[in-house]
Image (cartoon, rainbow, N blue to C red):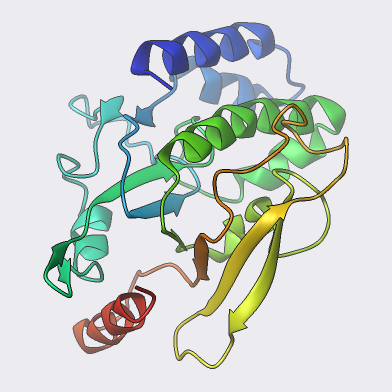
Length: 229
């Protein structure tokens, strides 16, 4: 998907839900506008949940790439990514599942409290995300936040993107490694029009947030990721 197409889809979603939530706080979150990483095809795709929000940071980028992101979170991420494996340069990109800007991630429970309205708001964003991910078609996806595991399919329900995956390795020190084998034959998937996934054979590494992880452990995580190629 192009940057223009993503912007158009998200603009439509934001207009649809503007001022519709019972929670005034959620309505204010929409007023902050959305942010997203510009899609880049890559070997490794790192997945977050949503962009953080600092009211005093007027220079926060609403459009960015993995390479030009300056937040300390990205500085930490770069410590776990091998730049080269077997003489081959490894390319990396980043995507958030959702496009609202908020620092406290318990906001997801706020959307769930809005019942079907909140679920629809999340699902429509996730539909955009899945189309982007299918276009990127990475070899490895790093899901570095436990709060986002369910959206990728580690838990069988709810369906969300509907990826079928099987466990490859649960003996890793810092995560579990799965492999995508296809899509669930379920009309409840958020993008049922996708009949065959481009991610068949893609490995998915489920780990935790890297906050307060020592440099020694970051090096061990980097070694685990290198072993996936």
